[in-house]
Image 1 (cartoon, one colour):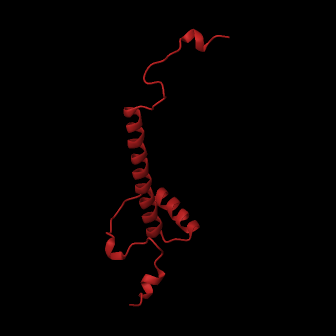
Image 2 (tube, helix red, strand yellow; image 1 turned 180 degrees about the horizontal axis):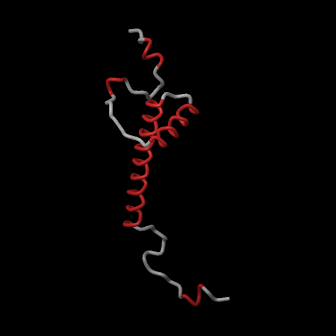
Image 3 (spheres, one colour; image 1 turned 30 degrees about the vertical axis):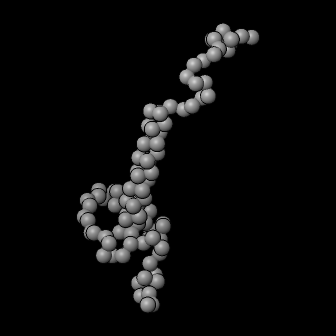
Length: 97
Protein backbone atom coordinates (compact mmCIF):
# COMPACT_ATOMS: atom_id res chain seq x y z
CA UNK A 1 0.00 0.00 0.00
CA UNK A 2 1.32 3.45 -0.94
CA UNK A 3 2.02 6.05 1.71
CA UNK A 4 -0.11 9.16 1.68
CA UNK A 5 1.41 12.55 0.91
CA UNK A 6 1.09 13.55 4.58
CA UNK A 7 2.96 10.41 5.64
CA UNK A 8 5.73 11.12 3.14
CA UNK A 9 6.16 14.65 4.51
CA UNK A 10 6.14 13.58 8.16
CA UNK A 11 9.67 13.38 9.58
CA UNK A 12 10.68 10.10 11.16
CA UNK A 13 9.49 9.90 14.74
CA UNK A 14 6.77 12.50 14.17
CA UNK A 15 3.37 11.67 15.50
CA UNK A 16 0.15 11.62 13.54
CA UNK A 17 -2.29 14.41 14.35
CA UNK A 18 -4.65 11.82 15.82
CA UNK A 19 -1.95 10.89 18.37
CA UNK A 20 -1.86 14.41 19.71
CA UNK A 21 -4.16 16.43 21.92
CA UNK A 22 -4.62 20.15 21.80
CA UNK A 23 -3.87 22.21 24.91
CA UNK A 24 -4.18 25.87 25.71
CA UNK A 25 -1.45 27.73 27.57
CA UNK A 26 -1.20 31.31 28.70
CA UNK A 27 2.12 33.09 28.25
CA UNK A 28 3.15 36.59 29.13
CA UNK A 29 3.46 38.89 26.15
CA UNK A 30 7.23 39.08 26.65
CA UNK A 31 7.60 35.29 26.78
CA UNK A 32 5.42 34.88 23.71
CA UNK A 33 7.52 37.39 21.77
CA UNK A 34 10.74 35.66 22.80
CA UNK A 35 9.52 32.16 22.00
CA UNK A 36 8.12 33.38 18.68
CA UNK A 37 11.57 34.70 17.78
CA UNK A 38 13.14 31.36 18.72
CA UNK A 39 10.61 29.51 16.58
CA UNK A 40 11.31 31.85 13.64
CA UNK A 41 15.06 31.30 13.99
CA UNK A 42 14.56 27.55 13.91
CA UNK A 43 12.31 27.87 10.85
CA UNK A 44 9.32 26.31 12.57
CA UNK A 45 5.79 27.40 13.29
CA UNK A 46 5.18 28.35 16.91
CA UNK A 47 2.95 25.35 17.78
CA UNK A 48 5.45 22.92 16.22
CA UNK A 49 8.34 24.58 18.06
CA UNK A 50 6.55 24.52 21.42
CA UNK A 51 5.54 20.89 20.90
CA UNK A 52 9.17 19.90 20.25
CA UNK A 53 10.39 21.87 23.27
CA UNK A 54 7.91 20.11 25.55
CA UNK A 55 8.73 16.69 24.03
CA UNK A 56 12.45 17.33 24.58
CA UNK A 57 11.85 18.45 28.16
CA UNK A 58 9.89 15.29 28.95
CA UNK A 59 12.56 13.06 27.35
CA UNK A 60 15.36 14.88 29.20
CA UNK A 61 13.54 14.50 32.51
CA UNK A 62 12.95 10.79 31.89
CA UNK A 63 16.67 10.35 31.17
CA UNK A 64 17.58 12.30 34.29
CA UNK A 65 15.23 10.22 36.43
CA UNK A 66 16.68 6.97 35.04
CA UNK A 67 20.25 8.17 35.73
CA UNK A 68 19.29 9.17 39.26
CA UNK A 69 17.78 5.71 39.91
CA UNK A 70 21.01 4.07 38.64
CA UNK A 71 23.10 6.30 40.90
CA UNK A 72 20.92 5.58 43.92
CA UNK A 73 21.22 1.83 43.23
CA UNK A 74 25.03 2.10 43.05
CA UNK A 75 25.15 4.06 46.29
CA UNK A 76 22.89 1.51 48.01
CA UNK A 77 24.77 -1.53 46.68
CA UNK A 78 28.22 -0.02 47.04
CA UNK A 79 31.23 -0.52 44.82
CA UNK A 80 33.50 -3.55 45.15
CA UNK A 81 36.99 -2.24 45.81
CA UNK A 82 38.49 -5.73 46.06
CA UNK A 83 39.26 -5.46 49.78
CA UNK A 84 36.67 -7.95 50.96
CA UNK A 85 35.35 -5.27 53.28
CA UNK A 86 38.50 -4.97 55.36
CA UNK A 87 41.44 -2.60 55.06
CA UNK A 88 44.79 -4.31 55.57
CA UNK A 89 46.70 -1.05 55.94
CA UNK A 90 46.93 1.70 58.50
CA UNK A 91 46.65 5.42 58.09
CA UNK A 92 50.33 5.83 58.94
CA UNK A 93 51.30 3.35 56.21
CA UNK A 94 49.29 5.26 53.64
CA UNK A 95 50.82 8.59 54.60
CA UNK A 96 54.40 7.42 55.26
CA UNK A 97 56.98 9.50 53.48
